[in-house]
Image 1 (tube, rainbow, N blue to C red):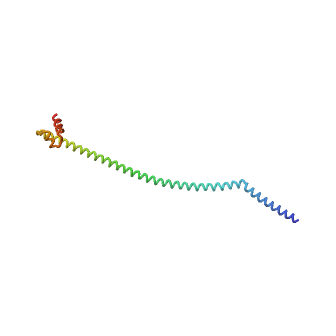
Image 2: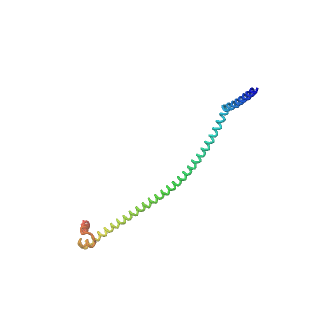
Length: 154
């Protein structure tokens, strides 16, 4: 009889174990439970993606602000450079004008000196001096003095 009780206890244990395992298997295979687990996992992934997206947007905005600052600095430097270029061009033009004025003064002086020398040569010639004496007095070569006299007489 002892054996019958032992077998009954063992059978009862197997039945209880069977029922527990059956319930767990039904619970894990239950479509509602699977859908609920999937929803929970999808919600967790969405929250994680939102956090990552917000962080990335924040980083992009920071970079855009830095870039805007750099662009403003570059624009200011470009404006300064353009002003300096304009100043340089104005001073260069002014320098060119001064050089032209100096050249024109020099050429005017040369023309005035040449006219004065020609006048001296012709004055001495009218007074009767020879080309050699006129050349000594004016510092011109004798051939040039003779050329001036011959061109004026024509």
